[in-house]
Length: 253
Length: 324
Image 1 (spheres, rainbow over the protein chains, first blue to last red):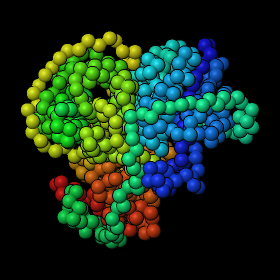
Image 2 (cartoon, helix red, strand yellow):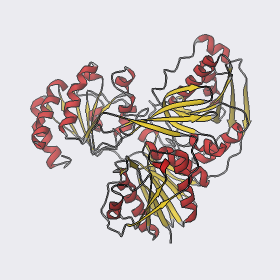
Image 3 (cartoon, chains in turn orange, green):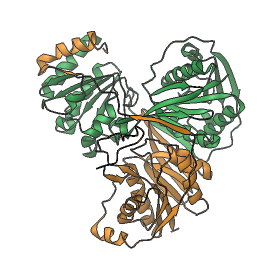
Image 4 (tube, rainbow over the protein chains, first blue to last red):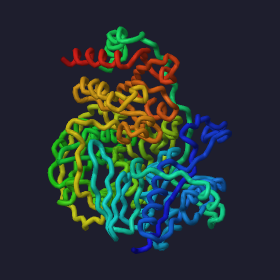
């Protein structure tokens, strides 16, 4: 078997149960009391990398994060799952412009000989949904996004990705960039042994300087409040009135 | 003078409806920028429905053809679009934030060295620069951005930009393009059952949660969805997707899809914060739940407290009457 050298690009994000409070600057998240986690879609990427390496019998899984010092914890989570080493591209500011992030990652990944470069399909904080395919373009590598099923045979892969009303079956050669969707696998929980081992795994911290990008943040605001709704009634008896309201008041039927 | 390029989508040689929304968004920008709208579609041959987009404000419709463009060809499409953009004077390029658009737009943006705003729900022009609003944290907050430089690269969230009729010439132009063989090749589309709508694009979503008690009971929701005569899709909460009752494709919420249908019917869903985030931009929300204190009632426009197994079949019956 050929050793599988795989990179997984991960991100530290606020937990999905976070109640979003806007900071006083009106432009950022108030991070007080916010719990940060490994981006859930990245868990599928880490898991897939580990499985591919295990299947190959040898190789290396390198996790790379761009973020603040605290993102070392996020990298440790992936190391506890079983990744071999971590690289933090340290930047207190994560640019709004995904292309800036992609350029920093591409500079780190270029020429490093990875057979696969994996990303979660998107981060659940900025919803940018773009860094993976941008890195692929910058490195001139083939790319398949939102992969929910994957088979790799030697230097060829077949991926399935969900599209509206169906599933696309996509062939690609390795090396390649893939972004992972829920359903691809069932990510493992770090075991205690893994958590202990992760503390000793190598982590490299590199400071990166990022450009300004082409997006200017004007404001971060709460979504408009929905106006108070009403309880139409109880049980099946309330249904005719509901239908009347949907037709005559809401005008959606 | 700054024109806008609207990138349309086709499947099986027919224009996808989301394309009308992309043209509508492009028209809004073009009017504000004082330019015209070029609509671009990539296909193996003529695209049925392409001639119609003049109605929604396209001044010109360009079909770029290549034998490899029948199915989505990521690299070929990205190259052809980037070249087209470079050859014009475009102030903005609009895509659909569909499965294809969200894959394609970053590729084109990276080729052009331009930033990209994905999944935009509102747009405008301020002092000649394009501004966009996009939901972040799954809709728990809205980010307003100004895009500096041109072209502004944007993808539009489906179902948000209601197509508006703004008749323009819609002049047709078809041109074959050279395209080297792509490394990434879409071999086929395994179609879902005929008539199945995707939750991301359905105007009506009937969503179920743990209150359904077991997977087989989703039949009552499928029947309700069917009563809407092809306009409704079935959605699901994270709890039931994680339990394996429903496919991930149907999941609404922060780790599923963020949706903005005209009507969202939440059945047996208590309303966890990550679920509410994914559906709160629906135009009208109906909640059916036996727990009158369920958080879902806080965002619902109309609620019925009661046993869903009584309420939903009755609702199905009433909806059928409307469509009867």
